[in-house]
Length: 374
Image (cartoon, rainbow, N blue to C red; front, side, top):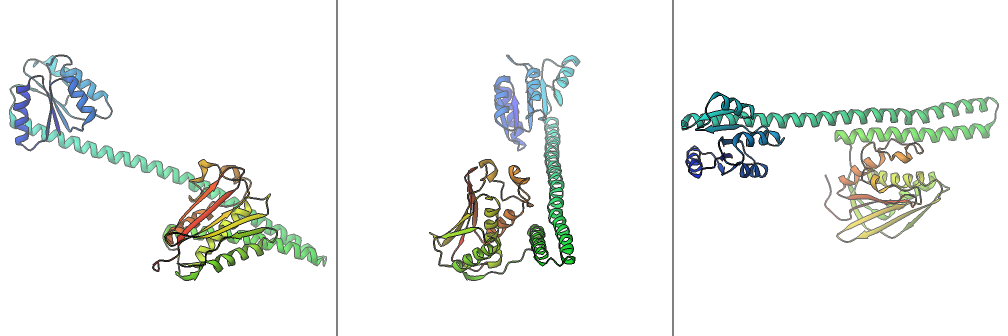
């Protein structure tokens, strides 16, 4: 849209008619003050500005327009029937004008200039948008690069820790074996096995994350009973952590369509996290329930350290670890990200409820009856 600014209504009417004949969309203002109000409210591609006006003259209006970052690139064409000498023309350009035309004007020349300036404005506007998008992309690449470097550092540390322990325990087991000390040899081999299991889980998380990013993580959906599925997952964790007491409540005697192995990953992750982040408590609580609208939910609650409210939205992000606990507890920060992707793939929802010092509850909800997912 083009804005024409002139204190004489007859001039506005005549010029507006010429431009509308050439299919331009036109708006008008009878003063500089009115023009500035409209410029801040509406989007214009060009402004035709009379020089001699009461109140703010054309030069002052142009300087104000150029002074706003939002409007500084709008082309301005000055029109004048009185101030036509070199001094005023120079002032017009200095005020931010793109052209200075003397009345009476040739309508064909004016239209030609308008089309040219509008085209240049549109091209400039597009270049500005492209530049802004590129700058945003560069900042995103910088952020991604920073996160990648941070992750590599964390991964190197986390993978090196169990490897170092394995090496140490094997050396101790070798010495005990040479001394024919079978109890100590067995103890060191058991500790080696524990560290290898940790290493195996870290590598599995890396592989699963890579497959999720590339879209190649496989799913095998089938119908299965939810209640025995949950009991089996609890039993796996109970066998691995005999000192912990996993208390299950509720009943979800329904069938669901899903990949039992992938959903088992989620339950096992929730349970191991609950154990990991509640070192001073032996009780873990699992609640299952059938919800309205053919849904089933599972909630895992612990009495651990809890999570600050401002950190909770990021817990399911890739590579995220809560800073307050990252030095105290091992992990790559990928487990919950993998869980989130698995639950999304099953058409479900997930989340966390927690307060620092009062434990945390991680939950997910999936459909209990639906068509087989592809």
